[in-house]
Length: 75
Image (cartoon, rainbow, N blue to C red; front, side):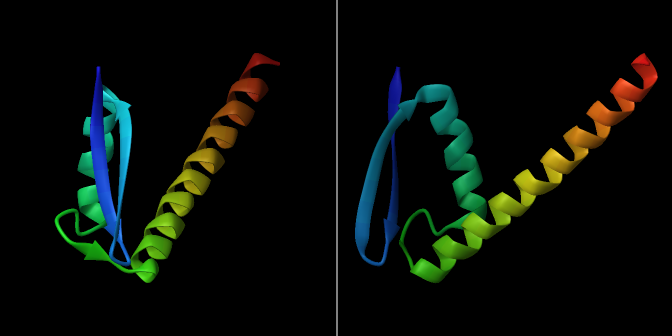
């Protein structure tokens, strides 16, 4: 089942259809980064993008540390 998720940026509304479980997760996350009921400027969009990539960077670093530790223990 799919669900429509919408966001307004610089006065333009963008709608996307997503799988329901992911849509619910995304809506919850978007409420942390955006005005989901109104307009968002490009700066807000850029800051959200940078924040999410910083989170992914940290997660990737932690993952590689765990993999290195695991590989060291397996040898």
